[in-house]
Image (tube, rainbow, N blue to C red; front, top):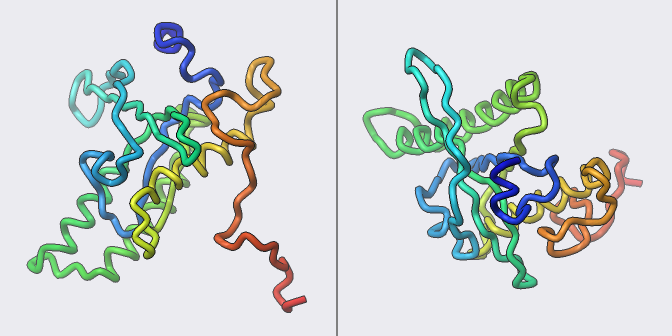
Length: 197
């Protein structure tokens, strides 16, 4: 709350103060998000959270806020980071001595994403504080794929939650367009029946 007050209510809806965890199925992770997509730029860090973890007293955790430029040229702000264990899976698959194939990496990445989702879903401390963004990089060499994917999730999240924001029944200003429900890559509606009708 103090951070929000000190930064002109940048994150106006408390239900959207979530950590967006990037989970690329390929496990290819950039240490600098701007190198992954030039429309994503570091803005500032949130205040550090200190906890006793795994024998380390007052381990410090901090997340970063990024500015994300939308296709409409409006800036959107969001707390985002990759899931670090995926970087280790990628490194293992690149080391011949690990005998860890690309297929093994894919299988383990999918298992990690599913398990992380289950753990967070059952954590009272994390309830409502995160959003998992599982994705596969597009094969069409779209240099702004990641920023579009993050913004798609923010719009979807806003659609799911905006009525819960304190007294706010209008879309908040950090969203660039009216949100749409995006279920598949196809713009055309499809049948939900398995028999093809």
